[in-house]
Structure formats: structure tokens, C-alpha cells
Length: 66
Ligand SMILES: [Cu+2]
Image 1 (cartoon, rainbow, N blue to C red):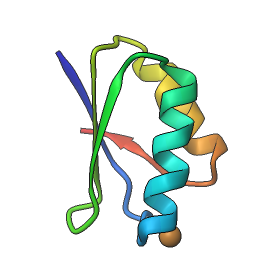
Image 2: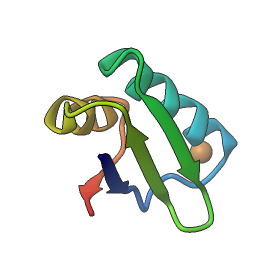
Image 3: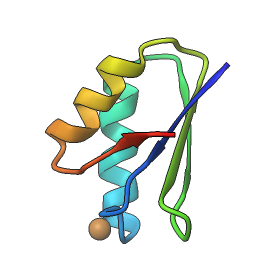
Image 4: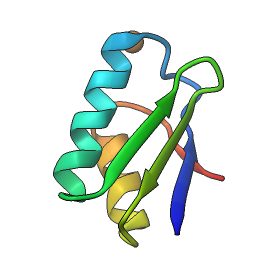
């Protein structure tokens, strides 16, 4: 099962790094795939969607579940 977020304000490599770090911290052991051109973050190996969404938000971005 994978959890997907759309993060429109993720715009560069720095954002990718910040968001990946936040997700890793919220869901240790999950794997994170980021597609910058489509602003899509896909997380697999966890069911902690709410926790991950909160972590991305805390990192300063506006994620929405897809
Ligand atoms: Cu950026």
C-alpha cells in the first residue's frame, strides 16, 4: 500500500531533501519517492498517513492526500 501526497509548493532540490527528511523521521523504515516535476510524494511501507501529512506540514509545506 502506498500513500500519495500532492505538494504544490515543493519546488526544488532543497524542498525534496527537507520533505524526505521529515517523512523519514515521521515514518522510520518507510520509503519515500519524490517526483519534483509533478510535485508528487509517494510513501510506501507505512500506514501512518496522518502523521506523515502533519510532518510535511510542520516542515513548512501544504500537502494534500491524493
Ligand atoms: Cu525548494
